[in-house]
Length: 627
Ligand SMILES: [Zn+2]
Image (cartoon, rainbow, N blue to C red):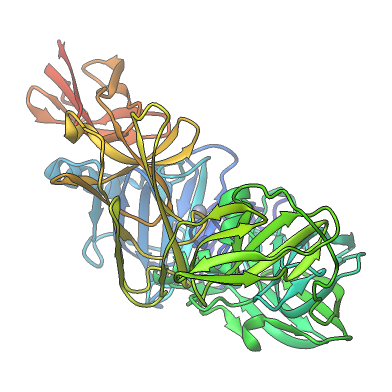
């Protein structure tokens, strides 16, 4: 649908619904979004709009307002080819994943790349060096950097470089009459004295929809402190993409308990998304539940009117009405409501006997260790928990689904092991690590150093060392594995196996059976040190195979090559012709290198040399004479 004749004269300034900002793609015409500002991504909040480009590259991109180019960044990953414009009102607009730049800017970048002999570059042109009017073409859309399909990533930032929601400027290029969707609700017991449906367990429920109203047709009871999490997204009209919801408000008995509004944030805080989403669920199932309670380590400024950090206190014998109001930027609203009955804490006074216990049936939730055992009948067994060289006798906290469940407050003490009816469980708890202060730990297989505020919450650190079945690989485990980390920590492994050709070994995170993710690191005498933000199982692997190089086209006019590496990944590449450095654009997604001449009139001539080095230091050199 054509809204206005904006395409004919995008600089006219009246189209697009915004007085100051022009929609940067096809202004005045209907546009579609693949992503919105504030949308929940795995490790950050999405900083801008992802504007669709009809599945193709090369659409002209218009300056959103008068201003000048203040920054240019070319990188292999991330934003790829990115342009920043500073506007007279102090805001900055950002255009990312570009295929190419307006000619004058492109010439300038290319010269600087040749001067520095580097494809990756960051430039800060002088104010006024590249001045543009609102609606001038500044670049062309693409798919560069960490982009999984052609689109424009567009941001508007304030004077402090905090990102704002561009849709607040009322672009009529986007049509949205679609209210947010609620897929799932999770109810979480928040401490050892809380229960949901009589169990100390996080439960998920699927609401039933009627128009934009959602409800849960099931009886729910809870005791103590209750937390709510939501799996939700918002769509715009005519587009299947699941984008972010701007405002979520939680009411208990018609009283506002928490309001979360994502309209502005700083890049310094974006990793705190790991405290806003349920990290364990995200890691194991790739779904992003939005917590409607504020964790102690959550430093985000999205909350208003928070009562008891959004945690609901269930009163015995009372029905509580829980409702959640969701609103998108265009003011479309949805509502979820359901009732939870407050109950007294159930006590385990049933009678059971002998239980075969599965090994390692324990989990941790909200500082509480949960031990459970299948039970048959009769007598309630005790569990013996060993902590601080003392034996503690535990009675079941409750019985649920033919299981006896024992709860242990980890803040009280870290247990070494537990016995239930002659079966033993061994834990690998090593230390209770405070979330705010720096902390160092070492044992005979590793050293760990957390800087201040590396963690979001108190950590009950576990470590383990083991070998594979034929003792050719060793594993260093630092956990619990589904714990989020805000800042990089230092992990130092103390290998016991012998390593030949040591410099070819690097640390890898074990991500599955025969699946490894490169983490880097270096030897420090006989120890191996890395910086990481991931708990998990680490191992050292040798990459002795150099990168592959495949020529696609080598001529006087252009050079195109494919490069790849099997394990550690490509660290750098360098191509020269007759000794002179040649700018090679690199797209890691297609493993593609292609040349860009400083002077297109001068043919490539002489000996071409391409050197490619992987992260383990293996080098491959390809040479060919161009005549
Ligand atoms: Zn984006």
